[in-house]
Each structure stands twice: as structure tokens, then as C-alpha cells.
Amino acid sequence: MADPMNLDAVNVNHSHRFRKVLLEALAILMMLLVLSPFVVVLFNAGKTYDQITRNPAAPPTDITNLFDNVRQVFGDPTTDLLGAFADSLIITAVALVVIIFFSSMAAWVLVRNRSKFSKVSFMLFVAAMVIPFQVVMYPLVYFLKGIGDTLGIRMLGTIHGITFAYLGFGSSLSIFVFHGFIKGVPLALEESATIDGCSQPGIFFKIVMPLLTPTIMTVAILNGIWIWNDYLLPLLVVGGSQVQTIPLAVTAFAGAYVKKWNLLMTASLLAMLPIIVMFLFAQRYIIKGMVEGAIK
Amino acid sequence: MWDAVFLAPSLIALVMVVILPFFLGIFYSLTDWNGVRPVITYLGFENYKEMFSSVDFLYSFMITLLYTVINVVLVNVVAFLLALLVTSRVRGRNLYRAAFFVPNLIGGIILGYTWQFMFNVFITNLTAAGSLIASKDTVILGMSIVNTWQYAGYIMLIFVAGIQSTPLEVMEAATVDGASYFKRVTRILMPMIANAFTVSLFLTIVNSFKMFDLNVALTNGGPSARFMGQVVNSSQLLTLTIYNKSITTKELAKGQAMSVVLFVVLVVFSLIQVSLGKRREVEA
Image 1 (spheres, rainbow over the protein chains, first blue to last red):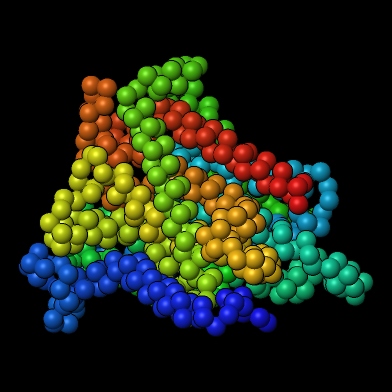
Image 2 (cartoon, each protein chain N blue to C red):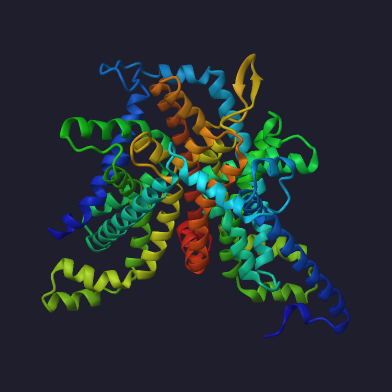
């Protein structure tokens, strides 16, 4: 392939090299600028309060300060950040499993079943994406409360309650993404299995679902990042109960330790760490998944 | 039979969690619902009338519009420039792409506290200038900067996908013709990825109108300002106004009316985006 930059004569080579160096310098500068808040958090999580007020830009000098801060943050009895980590992990994991199974099942039916009801249902899932959370949040909370009062199934302040809410809000985009992929799966595979006497669940779980693996990754990433970071839904559904998520715990912590920047930066660092570590390992999938979710 | 079993869990959840509360919500906006009293009185459009004469709401709506405009410009310009950078011949493109994307992974709450520190302690300490988010005149700009920092890396990916799907030959042919880099980008590349611009504009508009988490953690509406002879929260965007209306003053029905307005705004933008996408498909 011809290099479009070098099609001209050799005499422009010099200025091109200069331009390339300039481009590289610009890229590095931009990267430092974008990443600098993370460095600031890391630095100041490793300092005492006095060191921060004296010079917030100075690097930390003693690693034991970091351990001290971490001990104080995790040891705080009123906010229980460690418990929030566990709850966030459980809620995200359970909600992801539920969303992945139920939306892929539903999407498969919506593709293969060409009835009017199926078409209307799909439209309903897609249309629901436009509804902002603010319109439904309070009616939903009172509705969930009503289920607890009348049917005796407690939905507020429980893991199953918030999982159910996440299935409701997460199913639209997930079904949409699965739907787009399943449309391209050839029917012949499923038909031959039917002839072999395979039942419908058998066909889905043994034949269709394995084919969905890349799409499952996309759906898991889109929903996982949203649920892990979500604030308002957990605040309304599990806020003030025994169940707590990281964003809820960090807000409570920030309310209790106003301007205690060493502890706040440590709490922020701890809250960021899991998702950044995950990104380092699954970077390629995460970027791909986020783009697919946006463009569809 | 199995079809119903497979469809039921998602459909029941959607109807119970989104569809029913949505219609309930619209109905409540026409009443005096406060979440406590069991008897609800129908008021017609009373809440809406009051809302459009309420200084709080008008101010909040206005700054949400302002915030949206600033954001749409900042995010898209920065994202497009970053996209050009990471699709150029610079070494380590993938590293830069990943680095620019990282802020997107962190939730608005955590970022809000982090940037509170950046503005109020770090930057003020280094530059001796006042904090952007401490003054009513610059607080919206401050929020937009944080949002751009977080969101531009995501929008960048959409532009990158667009750029990578354009045939290289066209740009190369223009190079041979002696067109400058600026001309090649504005006259050839940008029209070719018009679809990516539609998607990005729509996403940024929706994202700006829905902004909540960062607003809560970064400013929580402050500092206060005067508007039409009344004290208002200078950075309280629409979603936070809805939240406060319901939580602090327990006027849930009035909050519902505001959220219906938010819904209408989002529907309008969605319809515009869908029709633009359709038109482009026909042209192509």
C-alpha cells in the first residue's frame, strides 16, 4: 500500500517528521491531562490531612499513610464500605445473570415468533428506552412498597427487589442488542435439532445460547458498568436499608466526613479500583461492547 | 407454550417496573398526589400551570438548556479531535484510546467528589485562582468541563468507528490533489461520517438532560444566585430539581409534572434523531 503521506517528493519528508513528533507530543500531553485526576486521587489518598492542605500536588512520602487511611475508611462503623462492596458485587452479579438469561430468551422468541403480539412486545421494549427514570421513579417506589404491603413480598430494601427493577430497566437495551444478533442466526440449525426431537428449551440453551457468547459479553458490559455505578435507583429502592451499594456508601461517607480530603480521596480510590482493574484485563471487550451499545 | 414462558419474565418486569409506573406517573402529574395521603384529587393541568410560572423551574430549565448547549459543543469538539488523534499515524494509538476512555468507567458520584477536590483544593492551591464551581457565573462551565472529561472518550469511540468505516482511498486521492489536512477533514471526512455526528449529538443531548449523579456529588445545586427577584440554586439542573421537589418538599405531583416535561423533551429529540437516520438511509 502506498503511504498517502509520502506520495510527494522527498523534500516534504522533513516537515512530516516534525509533524509526527508534534502529534506524538500532543497525544502524550492529552493523555497526561486526562489521567491526571486519577494521579491526584492516588497521591492524596496516601497523605495525611495536613500534608494535603499544605500541598495537594506533592507526591506522598510515606506509604503507611495510605494504609492508615484505608484502615480508617474501612473501619468506619456508620458507613460500612466493606459491606457496600459485597452488596454491590452481589447486586451487579445477580442482576447480570438475570438480565442475560431472561432478555436473551425473550429476544429469541421475539425474533422467531412472528405473531402480532410478539411485534407489539418488541416495540414496547424499544419504546421504553425513551422514558427517563425521573418519570417512573416515585410511582415505582410506591408500587413496590404496595407489593410488600398487599402481597407480603418485600421489594424495597431487598436484593431480589432491586434485581427485579434492574431486569425491568435493563431488558429494553439488552433485548434490542440480542434481537439484532439473533436475526442473523440461520434457522436451519434449529430446524435440524427439532427434527432430532430436541425440545424448545433444549434448542435455546444447547444450540442458540452458545452462539450468543460475544453478544452476551456486550450485554454484560453495558449493564455491568451501569449497575455498578448506578446511584439513584439504589438510593430509592434500597436506600436506608441494610443493603447498600458503593455509590450510596461513598455519599454517606462524604456527608459524614466533609472536607476530610485524605479519607474522601481514599474512599474514591477504593471505589474506582475494582472497575479500573477489570478494564485493564478486559479493555478490548469493554471498548467494543460500549461502541456496539451506542451505535445500535 | 414455551414462547410465553421465555418472554414472560422480561415482559412482566418491563410492564411492572417501567410501563405501569410511567402511566401512573403521568396520571399523578394531574393530581395532588404526595405519596402519603391515600385520597387523591384530580387537578387537571394545575401542576403544569404552576410549574411554568415557578421561578425555580424556569431557572432550572434554562440552565439545563445552557448546560446542554455548552456540553454538546465541548464534548463533540474534544471527542472529534481525540478521534482524529487516535486514528492518525501516531504510535501507541490503542493505548491513547484506552486512556481517553477510562473516565467513562467511573460513576458520576465518585467523579463528583474527585472533581470537587480538583476544583476546590488542587487547582485553587496551584493557581491561586478561585474555584470554578464556587462561583455562580462559572459553575455550569465547571460541570461541563468535568462532563467533557468523562464523556468525550466515549463519544470519541463513536467517531473512531465512523472514521474506520470510511474508505481510505477518498482521503488519499484528496492528498494527491494537494488538499490541505484541514480541507480534507472538513470537506471530505466530516460529511462522510455525518451519521456518527447524528448519533453523538443525540447521545450528548440526552446525557446532558439526564445528568444527575455528577450534579449531586459535585455541587448539589450550589452556590445560590438571584433570578427574577428570587433566590435560586445556580447549578441545580432539571433532574435535581425534580428530585428535590419530591424529596425535600414532598410535592411529588409537582415533581411528576416536571418529569413529564423532561420526557417530552427527550421524545422530541429521539424523534428528530430517528427521522434524520431514516432520511440518511434513503439517501444512501
